Amino acid sequence: MRRDPPLARRLKAEIALEGPIPISRFMARALLDPLDGYYARSVTLGEDGDFITAPEISQMFGEMIGAWCIDVWHRMGRPPAIEIAEFGPGRGLLMRDVWRVAAIDPAFRSAVSVTLIEASPVLRAAQARALCDVPVTWREELDIRGDTPLIVLANEFLDCMPIDQYVCVDGRWAMRMVGLDPAGELAFGLAPLDTVPPGAQGSDGIFEVAPSLKGWIDRLAVALHGRGGAALLIDYGGDGRGDTLQAVYRHTRTHPLSAPGQHDLTAHVDFRAVCRHASDAGLGVDGPTGQGDFLRRLGIEHRARRLAAGDPGASERINRQLERLVAEDAMGTLFQVVALRSPGLMSVEGFQ
Picture 1 (cartoon, helix red, strand yellow):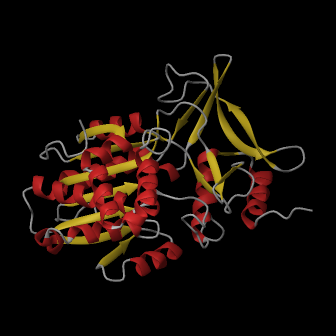
Picture 2 (tube, rainbow, N blue to C red):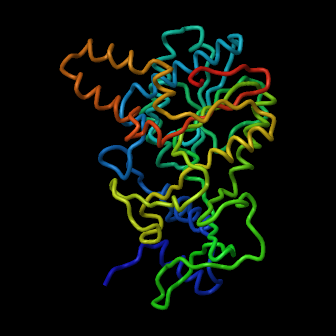
Picture 3 (cartoon, rainbow, N blue to C red):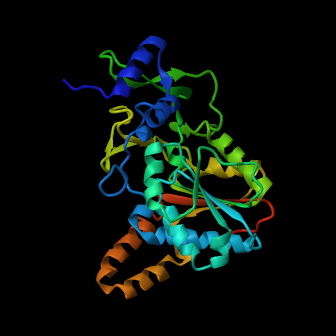
């Protein structure tokens, strides 16, 4: 007999007692439960883990982001101090590459302080190992009231933000819930609604909303208005339509309800909503644009040629990494990039 993971047993007992829960609550528990959530466990990233992110694929990704940060600093007038804050820094590889690139401009590097926004003690330990020569401060939230100009990085962070799903059936909307089937197993069901959910006007089928997205953008906007600077958001791109909830274990998709706390859960980011919330909060918006186009504009193809020339034996591997990051049938268009700016900062590099 299959034995449920600890969190599945707890969720089943709670649902049996209290009734079905929204998908956003299920996701939050599956990812962030302090005892049995995915990020409370020993998370393994990379080829040997559950999933791989762009910084794990190639140093070139982080190098391009580092160059972007230097360019933003120059556009801001080279302030004597600037904070780079990264949300969801994984194993710290992106920031490691950004810090290495910062050495090409000593004035920039001397101005930089690094903050990692990370709640997981497991991942904090991995970041400390990767960034042992980098002066790093860890926080659980962004300091929105600081007085230092700010650059925010968030690569594959928003896709972990819990979502709710709404389903239109025969012209009537319902909210998708997580409940129990007759056998007592976790299962999806529908709770009918009397009104059209906010943002779903003109949609049919399935519509997804991240309830905490607006609050996150609003908080970021307070920081950028008060401190000045820019934020770079890179993630799976979507428009809120369709069922994009997925679970991943060892690079293989699994059923989202099969093993809460054991498998990673993500959903595509509604970049229309990101841009709308940012604009409503008074921020400048560049993008969205595909990750491939963004990296090409920053010079990743030139960087790949330089790396291959310096190590001819690695040229095939470098070209494979490049294609994975920029090709349309890989990450080039699936991943979207948006920059958000404080009102006094002109458009930034990487966007048409």
